[in-house]
Amino acid sequence: MDFFNTPFWGIAWLIHFVIFIWALLQILSSSMSLIHKIIWILIVWLLPIVGLIIYLLVGRKA
Image (cartoon, rainbow, N blue to C red; front, side, top):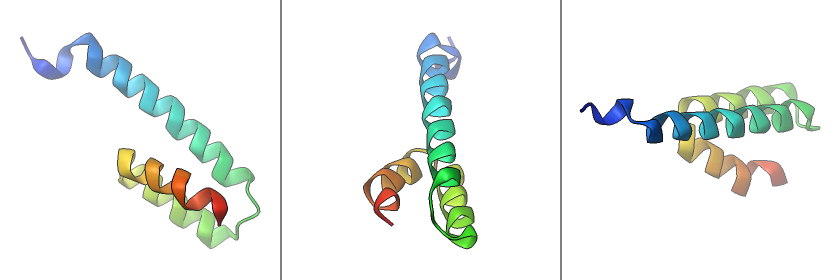
């Protein structure tokens, strides 16, 4: 059985996708400058789990 085709990965991907969309909406609606928004979106997109954690801990306060 292929490990990555189990239902767990589908659910994990869906949870990650929902959190990513939420973070994206938070970033876009924030009062940060455009360059900071672009940087945060790239961080969250390119570093999926770590980027979300960094944004939640640091980015929301910026």
